[in-house]
Figure 1 (cartoon, one colour):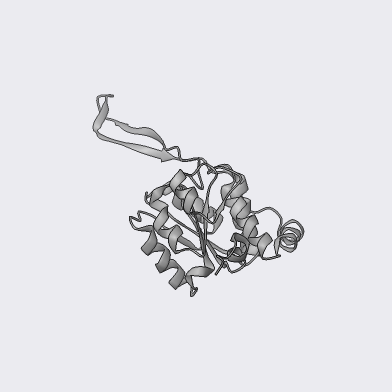
Figure 2 (cartoon, helix red, strand yellow):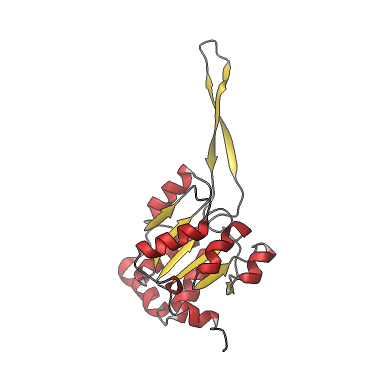
Length: 198
């Protein structure tokens, strides 16, 4: 029996989940020292921490808005915990946000169950081997263009763009085009909804 094509898999998708570092971002992590001066004007290194910040692509922000119009639910699963990611998730109005996750496969199953869906109705976008447990369960597994070779080998579809450069947008477009919704959704976005979060 022939395996279903990526397009056939995409036609079933109702939920799109994705990794953050290397997918929603280019994978680079930036840290600024967060030092407090003591009463003598010297830095108190014992209290030193860091501020993490990340860069997000506007194309992916538009993708989440477009996905919502196309009745495609969205969310993220990431191993790290970041206040920056929590803020971006709120900006994008992501429905499912799971941070600090060691086992992405289990988290993927839990979110799919919470959404009231079957595994073959959910997609996952990843870039590194930590994403494979979720990708192996997904009805449609997507690798970003600059994903590790092991990840690309197991993916059903590889995006034209790299992580942090519009890869989530590629995944959303691929799914909505496979479902025959792209033109209608685009018209609705431009005509009725207009640009929202980018």
